[in-house]
Amino acid sequence: METPIVKLSDEELNTVYEPSEDSYLLVDALEADLEILHAIKPRICLEIGSGSGIVITALAMALKRHHNVQFIATDINPDACRATRRTSLINSVDVDVLQMNLLDCIQIKYTFDIILFNPPYVVTEYDEVVDDRLVFRTWAGGKNGRQVMEQVFATIPKILSDTGLFYLVVIKENDPEYILSAFKKLNMSGKIVHERKVRGEHLYILRFHKIEETKS
Ligand SMILES: C[S@@+](CC[C@H](N)C(=O)[O-])C[C@H]1O[C@@H](n2cnc3c(N)ncnc32)[C@H](O)[C@@H]1O
Image (cartoon, rainbow, N blue to C red; front, side, top):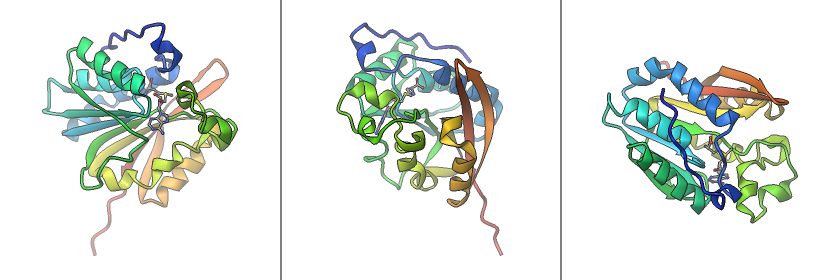
């Protein structure tokens, strides 16, 4: 998978998440899964919290030649929305960007074949999760670092297509096993598909799919 060109101004770097080890680990996981991703013949892909746009752009660059796919990105930060749009255009792909809180404006009637989320996962006080400063949104995950990501868990099975895949970035402190069991209760099966220890952080990529209902 090609690494997209990302250009962030000094001013944007005050609020927009600069591509980091977690972003690259998610791109690496997608690259390792490229055959699987082609096989599901994706039609609509969504990234929640796209930041600079590096991840959804890398996915779009890898899939655009083979399928007629629509790429959608969301972020709560308007600066990140602008950066994502620019990153997609610089790299000659088309990503539609929507500024919103998590999945608030996504209608349940739409289903996505690939959903990506590299959430703010750092364990912090709750005050930091609701801090108005946009840069806090890039990392502040509250209790167990799960207070932001958990808000989308119940919606994922409702908006993921039957053959779709959901990728989530987490760290050890988020308790990946707890997250896997939380999704099992939502009838979704997940596993760790990638992990890396970098500078005191143990990063994991979890991949989920719906559990097929057995027909009687
Ligand atoms: C760790 S950064 C990841 C950025 C990018 N996806 C990457 O991998 O480089 C988390 C992103 O989620 C966004 N975000 C945080 N809380 C959000 C919310 N409630 N709704 C939408 N986006 C949110 C942040 O603005 C930030 O861009």
